[in-house]
Picture 1 (cartoon, rainbow, N blue to C red):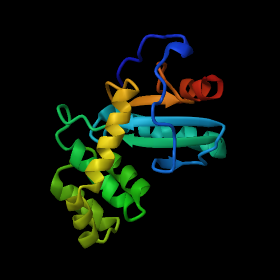
Picture 2: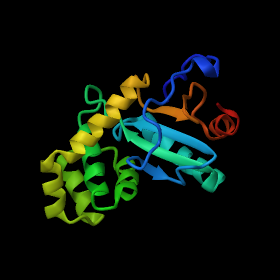
Picture 3: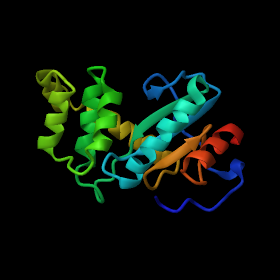
Picture 4: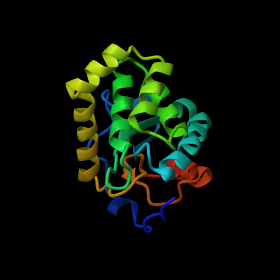
Length: 185
């Protein structure tokens, strides 16, 4: 896990530029009391470490939490991250984003084209539709939108979390993250 950014007064922390909306991949009701947004990369080991912690937070807060995942692949560090994100977005077009999201983090050790196609077949996705959707550029455009909103909000690395609309600078472990959500901005 990267070192958390130095503590800053909440009012000085960057805010989400693009608020949660229907375009997002959401777990939990959009109008929930608390919100957690992750800008992540499927090939980032820190994002993979965070995934089960986020699941635990979701279980703990239930319908009081709306969690959103936004793609922020870092291809200079993770050569398969863009293709993995495109695979997740193609799965979304068939209504299976979260299933693919979870599998990509479990399969993180090999996200080259062959294993990505195998994951898509096993999900199962309609592979003709999957190939057509990838070729259409729709997944790539969606990823570019996520990346742009992240850059505008000050995202520089993955994972970056926004707790209740503000960039989170504390620990990404369960109890500190839960406390930040319950007492954050």
